[in-house]
Image 1 (cartoon, one colour):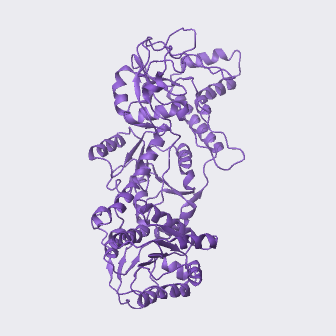
Image 2: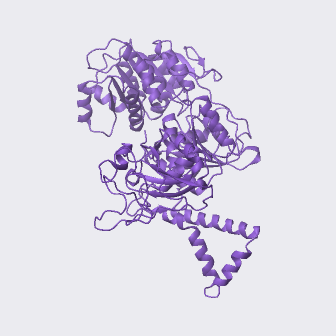
Image 3: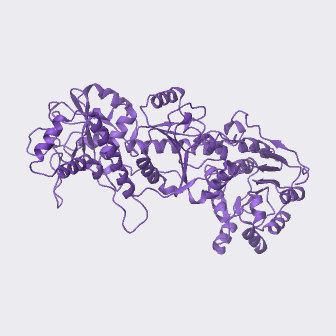
Length: 639
């Protein structure tokens, strides 16, 4: 700007101890709302700006895109409105000006979430939306108005936006608004506000025009500058960096597809909030991944247990927040996945620095919502790294990948030798069939289970279906476990979730193996019924499994577990249930067939008149009433 403007200069101390939102002195309802959203501690701009704004001083904040500026001005703004005298709803008490309609919607959504536990209201006002609807909303009264400068000025001229009672004015992305030609509109709006107002101005850069606005419209403002962390040349890890453009609604599907295609040896997935960490971990477990969660809401002993599992290679996916992942020392991470784009370039550098260590190759993948492309470009400009833009792997690509894996496995097995008996068997078949046909059939059989769970390409829509939600399921049939180990006598456990809850064999295997830490090879036959499922596990692991899954959910539904009464020998396996077309009842388990509270002694009736199932006791209640759990569809995303 040529010279420093006449306001105080405050540079953030990046080594300062991280602050929680409760320690900043915010209203209890705001702290509760932020905690419920899963945010653990304030970012640097929030830690510096919130206390200053709460004193009522004007402020200029300089920080890059994605550093948490919205909460930095929104929380103290709401705090002031809550702590002040609450007038009857009428003219706006706070006005937030932003450069684009997308940002207006985003900021309004954030304000709504933060004020959810209060009576405060917010109205977004921007171009491209019906004017009459906005006029009605403003006439009803709003505590906070989020607006683009042009539309705000239109309402001001129509006298539908009244600024006489304005207490707080915020200019977010002020440099962008000036670059877009809103200088005159901003000057007109600022001149129409009461001189007693508090003003906060936030920008990523401090051009001379920003200084001019500050000198004219702000009163002795404090200045907070969040310095970008400079990376030493050569310190950026040499990893393959890829970005996938994915809407928030499709992130779960995209992650599932990417993990299957990349097949990471071990991975860290970064999420923004602890709520998202827990939900994503449950989702990954239900799809058979040995995933573990790590966030600030966990006790130290839980965190230690998770890290022990990661270091011993008993878990291959760690889902974590940035706060919880600080100081982690794991050398063998092959993939870092940003489920949420990082809040700042330096955070991105820290995240991807966890892969590609000690000369190893690494992969950094970022899922980017279309509205976050500006943040991605900002990260690229600061880090001087260009991320490869990639399309999600298609089913054809996944099939080719599986064939490559099969080819490599076959080559390794051939090199290992010891195939004399198998070779003799193949040669005996060669008398009747071509050797190439025999080999092709063997490969097809090996891939049969994958084909059963493969998701078909969606027809007539570009929106892919989530594996396990719409794909084929094993309904009422026994699912054999390949690689089953002989761990001695088996016990049949009955789970209170079934086909009606959207649960499949992979969900049960993932939950059991992920929570209890036992090898999936110790899990035997699985039967999926409409309202319950049964799983064979080694007798010595029963208490481990039941203890690990106590109070847990599978596909969002609370699960209860009971031991099936001894009614068959360990070598006897339940016979598959079949469904007859035309509405006939499936054999075996009859609705209302058991006394409330448990199974009829005797369990499965081997060789009975009906295939498999339970022996009816002829009284209402049965298995479902014993658990009293209501099915809940799928997993909920919080954003």
